[in-house]
Image (cartoon, rainbow, N blue to C red; front, side, top):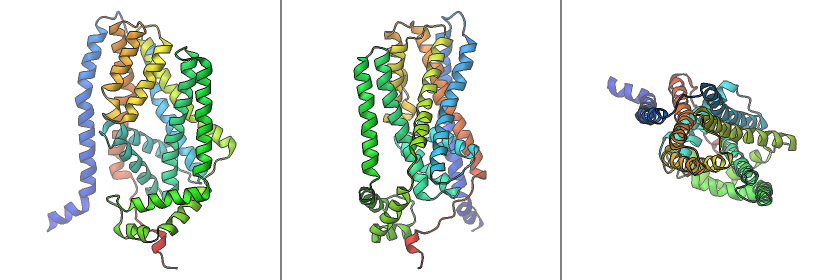
Length: 354
């Protein structure tokens, strides 16, 4: 009986440690092979330019930190004032989950971030809105920057690149206006509320309330989300932050190439960078493993970078921005197993007596 009570009390902690062990074990399994490949690539090089390496590392870390600041600024729009370390911790763990867990890592990362925000007394609507909008802004920023960048480096006509960027920007503004229209938003949320009853692990009582009172729930959520409208100046700040994330990430890649003594092929590097991000977004393998390295290596080789230098630069970049950041995130996760606040569930407002 005592053993059963112990398991009942501590099963969540034990499950968290199993997740940490599996994730860190996976990373530990990958690192020796990548380091071995890096050593083999470096044997043909005279020396590594450590100065550029020490530029690539902080740029790679800063890219993720800036993305975390995007999260924090979106929370401020809704009046939630969380500390920088708290938001960054959630951000690093979210990144680790997304880039190391196969197939469901992206969805798991979103659910983790929302849960951690709710534990810190951020309401569900704002928590979900801030996490999802951060991803949308970042993705659209990458598409705009990529379109213009491809035009600047001559991969596509500059006029076409600028036109694509304008179309994406205007399309995003139009979609935002449409989706945030009260009636459209309410109808869309009603469908999501009805679908939420099939999510495993959600309170059965709340799911029943959502199913029976979908109109009431969707109206409440719509009213909450309608007020989350950043000002024009705030929008510019959010877009600038999102764009900075990608610029820093790209500069980390460029510094990784420079660190092995190769000339930076800006055109091929930009295409390779975009392919890496596409590989990560596809979630076929954790962090785009295999696809990202292969596509980036092929573009560097096609751009005239010698094979050894191309392989070494790819490995440096991926060790920093994938495995290194993922390991940092899982260390935060392990620390928070015992220090994160408990999530005291409250039933849906629709169940509260009038």
